[in-house]
Amino acid sequence: MKKHGEELIFSGAWVIVIGTIISAIGQTKETTTGNPKGAELVAQGNAIEAFGNSLQALGNTELFMEEKEPFRMDNIIGCWLQAGGNSTNTVATEIEIHTSEKEGLRLNAVGSGVQGLGAVYEAMGAVAGKSPTKNLEATGNSLVALGAFLDATGNISILNKLDISGELLELIGSWTQVIGACTELIALAIASNIELTQQKSYAYPFVNVGYYWYEPNPYGMI
Image (cartoon, rainbow, N blue to C red; front, side, top):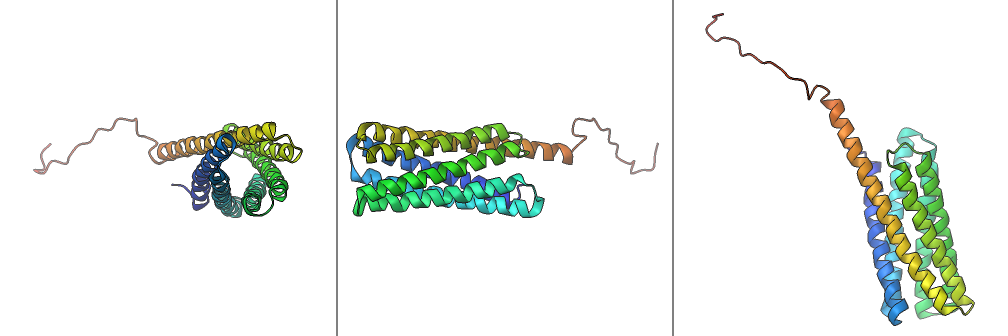
């Protein structure tokens, strides 16, 4: 049976995948067609990601309180940084749409940088952890970090009048984050199945041993 903290982390991973996909679809629309609805999807996706990051932060906090494992602190810091970065991106995109494109781009660059730093912390926590799929989890978080840093670089490029290369970097960065989020979710799912199998093996250690049963003779006969 999963601990409540583990359930929060797994649920958060699903939410993050959904958020990254919505954001990437929005970025694709904005880059390829210039559709303003694309930017709105980016903002919505980032908000969903922030919620997923928060769930994972709470889950890691619960597990840290139970286990006192130091690597959980890296995960907690990383999750909250990502939540803050994605929340900043949501606000920045709204500013970019409704108020000032330049200010929105600047704030988006900061938000993506913070998100990328958070993903680096999570990758460090995964490597130091005890999960059977920790390397795959670290890979997923590293890809999220790479995607966030590409997005930040794209925003800076657009600020410097390099619109085409900047938009391309944002597009690549958004889909890199999708791949990273999916990789982490797969790693968590595999780890959960391994743990479940181990628990069953522990609960039924003699499952492969043959037994001979006999029923007592109701007539008292031998």
